[in-house]
Length: 514
Image (cartoon, rainbow, N blue to C red; front, side, top):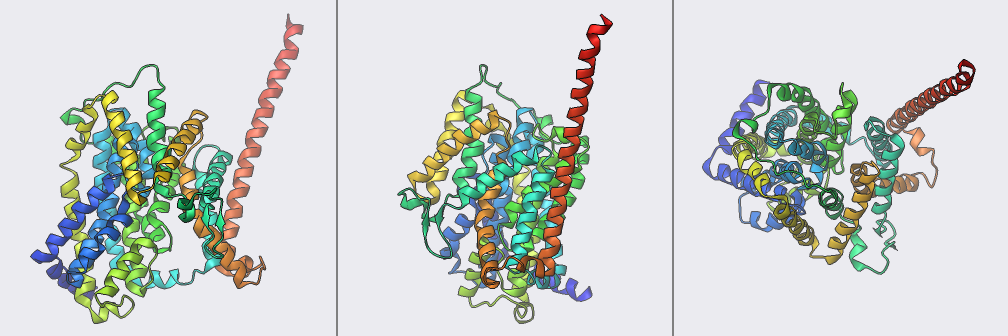
């Protein structure tokens, strides 16, 4: 413990030096802007600025890129809450209740709780990164393709079970997302699938056009179809701060989101996206008033925003401790470190303690910088709502088109966004949740690759999933959720039959009474 504190003191001496502090500040500002702009996202932001980091020393380069990463996690909530446009994929779940709070005139409190929850989760997860990195990373190494597949299947079933609505509807939307994820080049054989003559679909359907279409564009279509447009919300200064009840309702969701996000962040994959889905599902299931979710429940903002920021630090655990990136963003950062002659892994702490502990300390500093940046800007962001809807919605539509086009410079992506907007409009008219589609799209490549790698390992035998202890346990838990959902379904059917029976008896007795 004493040695850890001494090392942390060394890290702060590095992180608080003027040069490193400047790059942490610049990275946080760029990351916030990247998160606010729909379609850009942390991966694109880091990739575009990667060449800039080559002229810096190793510590400044890593701190700059890390600042962009968790700054984008903060910034993505702004447009999600105010306009129902996810700034990046991890903010999809924030759209649901964040925008509902905005429509009720509580956009300011939603932004404030998102900022505070992100700060608490980011800081707490850095503490976890500092103390738990080596043992947790060693456990993550025990996961092979069969374990990943079992975990992903379990994740889909847990989210469907905890959605609070119809499990069948949630799973059908997730299956639709999985089908969308099959489009593109087969990762194992190179076969071009379901492209219909469009070369641009070689990399598959991007998450950004799907998310922006399902949430941003569909919201515009729904509002435009109303006979009376919603009133322009003019926030007052005293309404920008959360109430005491909102703070109380947010406390446990922030704590649970922090823990879930950190643990999920260690596992390879799009952890910051998956963690926000898991957190939202857990909060909805644990809530005493699940009917408030989707109608402006503050827990639906606090939990997912805390989870995706906590997952950011969790993703650094296998990268720093073992040199194994847990996703595309840590992979880009790993490449940047290797360009500077750094070899992440178990020997990094011993060989370059200044870099490792300076990086840890810079994350503490970065979270404080982001809180200072975001809280004073809440009032400025909320003032966007003063713009009349006939002017605001066309501007949002232009914003969506430019953001989606900027990702790959592809008109096809704009077409996909338009199609998804129409699909989202139709699904929401029939009370289908659209968020599972995005989750299915994200998980599809990982599920397919894990499944096919597992069968390659076992020469086509499906028993490999039951011979490995971790995958067997995960699949048994998944089976338990299926049985629970079937039990719930049979209970509802029995209730319906009883009601119909009572009604039938009442109808038969009525003539006799007369």
